[in-house]
Image (cartoon, rainbow, N blue to C red; front, top):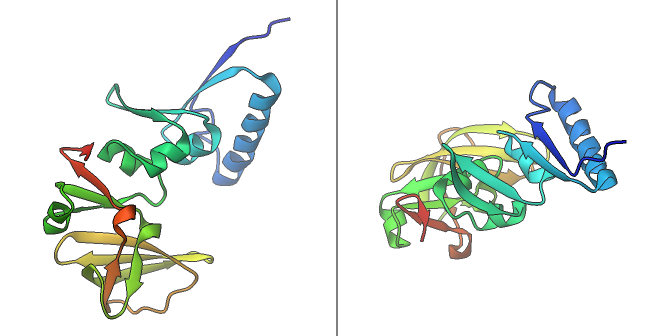
Length: 183
């Protein structure tokens, strides 16, 4: 009998619906444990990469952007490309004066790391749209200083479209980039 040491999967779940994809990710994880073999899995779906991989190689136009564990890539992206690829919803990228304050030409901050305040914060924003997802709400804002900002808020929000609010974030949650590379 054959006992291959390496398996190559080239986007095996891409044509499946969301529910079946989720079930198949579990099946593939169990298969990996059972076979104890190396599995190379090609995907454009960051959820598949994050949930199936021990290590991820992020490629951009044939160039390796970063190699690491899913959590390392999520917490410490080395390039803007990796920061934008890993995480759902994707990272906010802010340019202009706020980025310069932090020593880069761009800062990145994940939607779940931004707090909304009605009175004060780092940026004044206006609510454009809400998406109620049950356990959380996606709040789409616009800032006159740096464009669109997406915030993931726990629970159901009662903000009103057009409402002026403020967003704030801690320095530890900011990813600073210059010319696309981490500073």
